[in-house]
Image 1 (cartoon, rainbow, N blue to C red):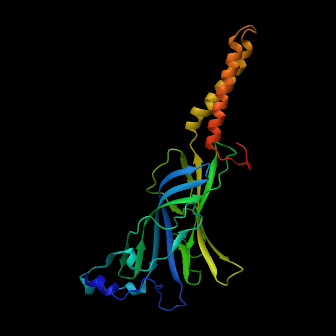
Image 2: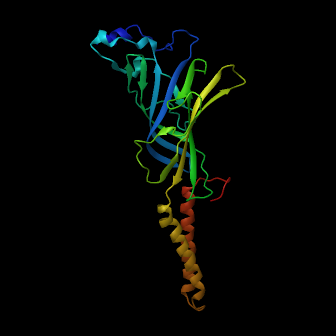
Length: 276
């Protein structure tokens, strides 16, 4: 309690924790994918459950553990300290922030670690040319909402000083396997851009998620029945011309194929860019 009061009694959470206003504050972030909830083909939205890991140093939150009974870490409500305003830029539902404001872990060196959970809905351009044997690449673009690159230096948590590409950009160690998609690759890229309106650079981290569809369900319930109906249409020519069931069989096959085409139209997005 004494440590908590000493650290936060005069702490202003609205001020960026740097000794000099011109100093850059390095914020490291990473993602841990917990679950791929849904990839909606019609609305072209990917829904994911993530852990958003963020680290930075707050010089105002340092102490000597020997003066506080050997306590070297402190768990505090995240609402009581300064937080980087890292948001998902390509958000699809207007909910840019994390789901729950969990507690942050403060180390005696001033290092702050915050790992809140979040459910994100992000735009994802769907290519259905090879449906259902397709592979989709969705991206999630994170960056600071109000700070430029001169005030907050955004970096990936696994990034080396001389590289902007991270091969394993998302942690899949605790990933709950999806019944419809296989996660193939999850690289990340740190970008820094200058815009004509401003002199300051603006940074973001682009997480790319490459997904490959599991085809067993569509093969059994869509492809095999359509092939079977196509073979039945050939057998119509082997029926006697005076058989009354010949026309009935043709109409039944046509109606069955129509049902499968309607089912396919309900699944894939109504796009004119590519044809499945």
